[in-house]
Length: 374
Ligand code: OSB
Ligand code: MG
Image (cartoon, rainbow, N blue to C red; front, side, top):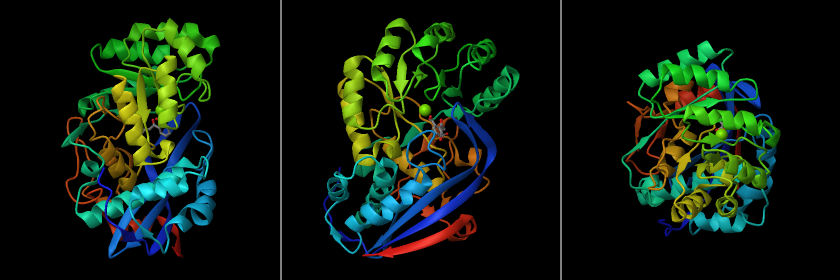
């Protein structure tokens, strides 16, 4: 990682943003129709770096929420850099290390700093992280539909768009029926499922029955705090387990791999506290021969561009969830739009994330603005 230019961070702007989704997105833990997030801008030396905090409105995917991230940012995280000369984005991570948890809030600052430093240095963020891909392969994550028939129609639409992998959200009672219908209609597509921790070991029989559908992997079937249970389940399944919620750090990744709790890892920058930890997870997994891929949190343009940057690293060897922004939003807050063609998303080549904020669009979707100085 390129980490060698000092920057004075003069000011932070936190915007609350609300962007309607084109469709309601349903998972085993809840449903969203409007993407609400905090957008962090850090200004220094004539540049702006941007980070999107992926904490959701409710603590159903992660303990963090919009309303916990805000005071953590203003009371603990931003004072570490505001009005200070920061020698590298890695310096922020070291200063923030004694603040426990709150990884999504930390990641917002770390992402904004990395974007700021990369813009000032004139390098693409992906390259500064060790990435080399010019395009990344992407799949889609499809929410739970009311019926198997609607699930098949939704899959058909996205297969036609060329996505490299279809991931179906599942929950008890809405699993094997959907998969049977989808597999019958599409015998050869790369197919995965994501349960968001909705099952227990008592459901092992149902989960084992999903082996019949030749899934590339099964994402987070069991409780997010129970790695041993995932290791137990793994022994009885042919389908590899991929962990999402359970992996908060490179230490978690090492533990999960050592225990046999997973054979694939979903990396989300926000869930793990920033790019540097995401790179460490990538490195640990790569050394163990475990493929990783970049997950998503229905990000708008800034968060999506950070995802594209990290997914350009070589160990991100399976299609991620960073599908086209236009699937979710009528208009995005950045340009150029982050769009996949035939399941391939170009990695922007400009400095930083390589995308520029569209001030008029951002103005329309911003519900409040707070400016902080050191
Ligand atoms: O578990 O991967 C998940 C969205 C919100 C919270 C958790 C998850 C998801 C997705 C959507 O699956 C991925 C995306 O398209 O951004
Ligand atoms: Mg997931």
